Amino acid sequence: MLRVTQDVVEVRGWVESRGGWPVRRLDGRIAIGLRGEARRGVDISWGEFEPNFCVGRWVFVYDDAPGSARWFLGSAEEARRFVNGGVA
Image (cartoon, one colour):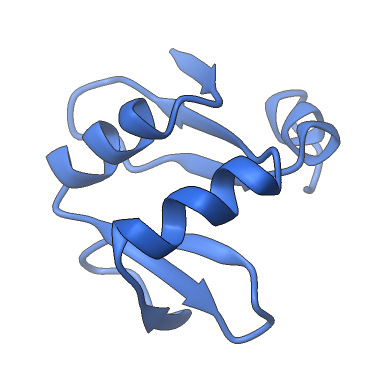
């Protein structure tokens, strides 16, 4: 089931429970790195991730099913498109 949050503690919990970490993409946006995925930027600390997430008013959409790695991070409008099956 997809869940939507703007709670950075919830984001961190989901990411870390899947062995993930925060990333800054080459285009400057924050993202999530998960094992088995192609590298999409440089690793950053949660201390850098959190203010960017909050100031940017990002939304995190994730599947809370055990073992699921389906997620999206972006603006509220982009998140709505993701949830509705569109390309973000």
